[in-house]
Length: 128
Image 1: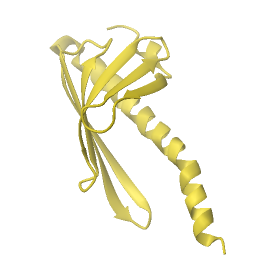
Image 2: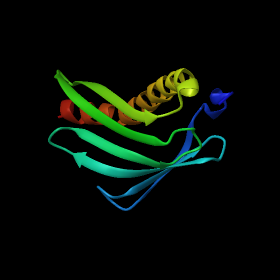
Image 3: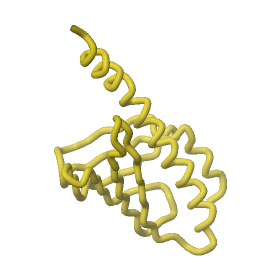
């Protein structure tokens, strides 16, 4: 598993087939390789999203992700992103380090994507 950094910047495109639970999300990496996720659950009340990675170039036999958004009040949200993986012991540390960087990049990308809509909403709220 040498050279995991070759995947950064990681995601160059995202396509969703279907809608809601059961939909398939296909991520194209900067290298051209694909990741395919099946959306397992979307719980609006709990503000939780879960997915099962069914295809990936990474050396894992199981990958299940859970993203929770916790309302902290005053317009602030804390994101918790947990990943359950099965990986061989000799690759565990390297993959854990890689995933930490990948998840941080994912949260930063989400924040950047949401900033224009947040700014637009704020502007609408203060406009007469």
